[in-house]
Length: 184
Image 1 (spheres, rainbow, N blue to C red):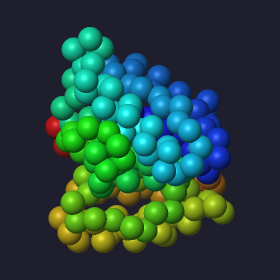
Image 2 (tube, rainbow, N blue to C red):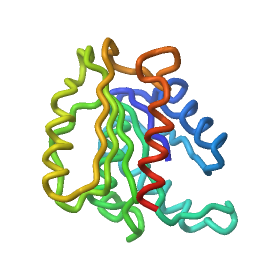
Image 3 (tube, rainbow, N blue to C red):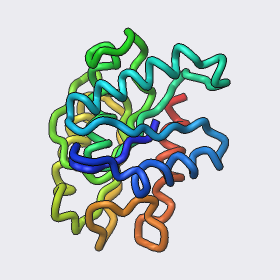
């Protein structure tokens, strides 16, 4: 499930989730891009509802829900992390397994839980919106708790580099897929 950023005021799906879902599908994965309502709480509720829908219709959709992953950029990364930490039921969805991996791009989230799923993060070192050191410190703390993490900081990149095409981050999505596959 790919979740776009947009500061919880809008959904930047053309940049942050549709391209990601397309690339994942090209690699043989079933991928969904969520268009959610503005607001952090309502966005998380919509994500919980979407996960519940996919689990409830897995056979019909012909998808495997084992070790699913949540992906997001900026605000979408926060959604992925929060649902990963608390699970869909905490936001009005069904009591379902938490994701096997959370893949986060360019956000500044410091909170974590010792129960967080394995987490992959990629950021740019020139991000004026979400300082990369916040995510580095978060992942270091998670790693110290025994949670599998992977952190990538790309030089010269600011907020919102999407797939990273023709940038220092080109290929990050393949690294994220490899990280996720190690959790399976």
